[in-house]
Amino acid sequence: MTSSPLLPVIGPDSIVLHIPSRPEYVRVVRLTLLGIASRMEFSFDDVEDMKLAVSEACNNAILHADPELADCHTKSGAPRTNETEGAADSTNGASKPGSVMVAVTPYDNRLEITVVDEGYIAPPGLPRPGVEPPHGTDAELRESGLGLYLMQSLMDEVEHQTGANLQTVVRLVKYLPSHKIQGEIEDNNDL
Amino acid sequence: LHSASHLRDELLRAGEAEHPCVVVDLSRVTFIDSTGLGVLVGALKRVREKGALSLVCPQRQVRRVFEITGLTKVFPMFNSLEEAVASCATKLPGNHKASAAPHDAPDSEVAIGLQSSKRDEVQGGADE
Image 1 (cartoon, rainbow over the protein chains, first blue to last red):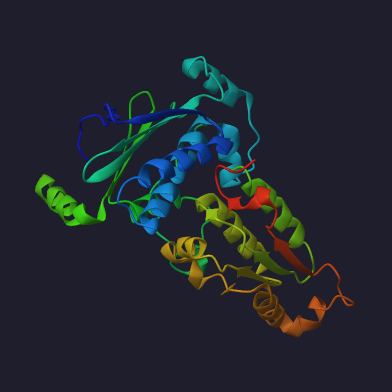
Image 2: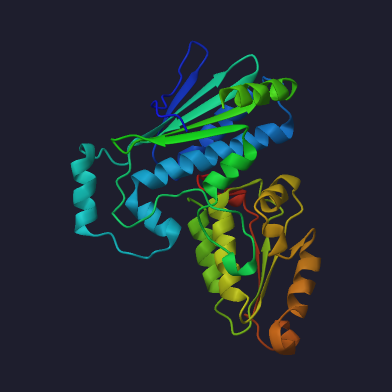
């Protein structure tokens, strides 16, 4: 990963959504993405893959910003404490539920999606969702942590970066079928 | 995250039987993400010690998510409710097949159908 900050690229062709940081709005992002991707030469499967990947990115963004949801998601069962409330309040005036920004930018050869959350305010000790391997054996069955794995499986490029302000930016790229090889060559040149 | 909690509650209730035979019907589910998968994995872990859990999953897009995550290896998956119920009943531990019979233990066989329009997505952000 590069050391330069990962910034959302917003150009004249970008469609930018700000959704409330609540699960019921992720569907709006999926529908918007469907509308944009359908106008490009993506296959049905590619569009479905992108819908799932962007949902995972949005879910993570929402979970990062809401300790209660994160508790529920990880099933830690830990009750929300006053310290948690304090942490939330001290972050940025904590305009709960906050918002998640999603920028979708079509290019000639690819579609780029950037998801930016409002920063991590969950209590200390609660792990951020990270890269997890798929379910290998029965004994390793996990109930959470599949999100980033799915994004990496479904998209051609995935970058994520958490800044000093604990704001996380996730960038997802899918190349058009006719440009997939070109995209891979560009990737290799970057290395 | 939205509809997942409803599903989790239903599955918790379904798994309370002595030898639960839980069939989750995903035939009208059009979208599932890692949250939905997590809820199902949690239910499987709770249920499998004393009972069985099967999925009805005829939708290609939904099944694909299970394939990508390797979960087709751990969930018995079927195209029809009948097949799933039959498989589930035969898998009950200790030949407790009879417990799936309604007259014996009426609450031990629970088929959860996600069939209302509100439940056509099991996911982090939900409909309605």
